[in-house]
Figure: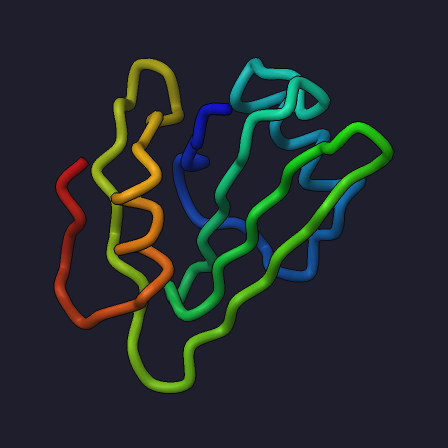
Length: 102
């Protein structure tokens, strides 16, 4: 299982269908392959994680009360960046630092 961050901010009103299409269209990936796709909202207080399991999709949404999620550094050539499980855990903790070096 790989973890990919979507480049740019995402409208947090998007659900499973819209986020799956975003993965196909902008990340050139298949959301059904079991990988994990991570999306940040414009204000970086909202984060969504999309994954397809054997019997359907899972959508996780975390909204921080005060802090902001770290701003990941992306590979602009691929519009996605693969991160490790450890870096994902740090990202989910939320903090006021400006960037997460992955």
